[in-house]
Length: 385
Image (cartoon, rainbow, N blue to C red; front, top):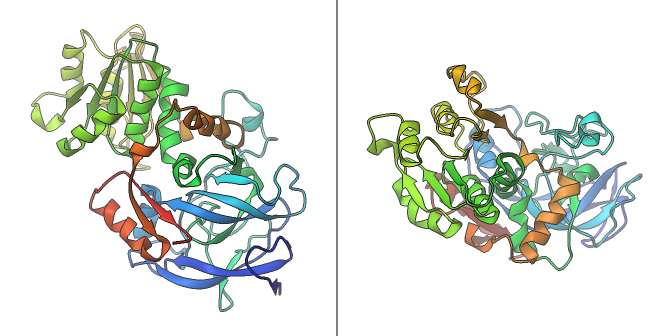
């Protein structure tokens, strides 16, 4: 049994008592509990979470009837290193970091490849509620282990994370802003900048105008696209989307024919690039079929049902349209996230417009209410308020 130490201690051998929002049952409000966070083991880091936000992935698994309860959710966050375990030599107490749901071990074939960010060791695993090192949780409440989520569990004042899932960032960056870069915003941004790669003056269609889709639009704006067309069945999102460079909008419900035909007609044969951010198979097919033959590139970001099937005519490929998929925007977390933070610090990337709500940690359930009611984009949860 590990000894208990006070908050702020840099002694890696102590357990830290702190507040955490525990999900005891699927779909039930989170409960603020006093938990113990064990010290980091080899290749692990314990961080003090300063700010976290709610992503739809948290909401999805909170609603899910899985066996992994009780559980501490949360994976979009920013914090400060409190202590490090054996073997961690690239991070030290006081470093500012972004935890990420996927990692970069730096040694596997994926990490060594310039073409992939899908680390063999630290790839996302929604079914794992323990640490890789020993198959145990670092959270406990009255001796009862509490499951982790995505290897991050940032709905806790302190959490333990594999060092390969932490990106060290500029200490001057405001943590209450850059915390949203650790998942959805980077995913959409990278899907456009790293995968679709629109050129200056090109046309881009974005399917789905939630936070990820708007981040994809932000990428198109940064790249200099001249036309950014937003496609969404909720027209209430259109006005907000104008802040992200959107120039035109289409509600598929307003048309009796497939939306790809509408886009093709209004763009003289199709857009140069498209990014799909809904997970809908119909939207995926439309995103592919709406790009121009010869050079059009469509990128799939949304996650469909695992049994869904994508159907299109092979001639669409033969006519030199390209279909691509992406995971976390093709960013390697430790290598690339610091440069995205720098984009924000250099005023190239605008983050403030993604942040629509703020709540103190004690009111974390309000963040869930906002998301379930489709209110706003990102809600920042301050761990110290």
